[in-house]
Length: 500
Image (cartoon, rainbow, N blue to C red):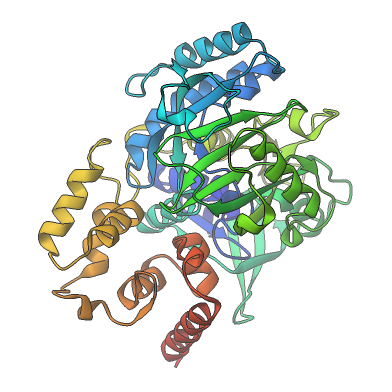
């Protein structure tokens, strides 16, 4: 008998499971695929206040988001770090300078900023940020936000929940849920082995993201569920378009915005789009129209045009926004909505919307509703917590790299930096007693070695090459198709030997 059974292994589900377990609730979580395989790994990967949400008067959401930036940075300084954003201005633009200044003034002062530097004004004729842009841009505003490795953010929440006692079940689909004598009876099936299990819980949390309405309809048997508006966002990754660590914020004539962000050292990430989506979320793919839109929008700013031939990878995801009746996809609220029901005789909490930045606060608000429904346990605790591997100072990344290189002198600089970025203080667990590169085992391509793959399988539930290459790491950008196949075969053999 669990206190909570959570459906969904995105950031909302894993965040709620982590918070609840830390308070003393017994928790089980089922995710039908891999962690962050839906919306949570398809974001623009920002920890941000949402500057454009001010235009839609979402002050509560923006304030909460701004306040969370430094909280999350302190919680996971290996996978979250500050980033400066350059917003080029031109007189014919859709937003006058005074409006941008006002928005950035609110941005600087709404959220209790302490460590992040404030907004400044740049002369693009002198600042290096202007070198990659067309000559028509002479002035820019520069402000602070944050960057996150989104899929790792999710899996580390799951890891921490499991370390604190939660039953975490990836690739496990909930096929039915009904109430019997005031208790939820939940039936699950393992999507790999086909094994079926039954679980009991006092309360259910439906955090299935784009599938939240499907769970309400299929698992609960409610035919009238329609609470989410599915909005597709797509991104393109191209070869590096500019030098430096700053990102760009571009305003488009259609009132939408896109970001161009330094990505994985050698690339530039450009996105996102906003359009309504009506098909199955698992089938979402970038369209030709979206590809053209992103290339054209970025080419309005960059000296060197962005063309489809530059693209090395694309990804798309469906955002499950709460359906507030907004006429345009980009105007639909980004705020989250928590609805509790107990019509069947036991409580269920349905989670709609949300974003990476507010996921910790969403979990706290969800636990307030859990306490009302089944009784309170421990107090809120995550604001001062650390995610696995993040127990070092917020500005201590370089020191951690030095420490790792001191202990493992054979590591190349680039690999040492990447391992600390991915695993923080847990990198030595991955490296173990290795004393030379040969001890890292087989090299699958780039700087991905057997030791890292084994760690991801043992500690982070990775079972396929896709899990390793595109969610636990982004080494898929560097491995060939043949190398990816070799990795898949290796992992399959490892799993088969464990099953014997």
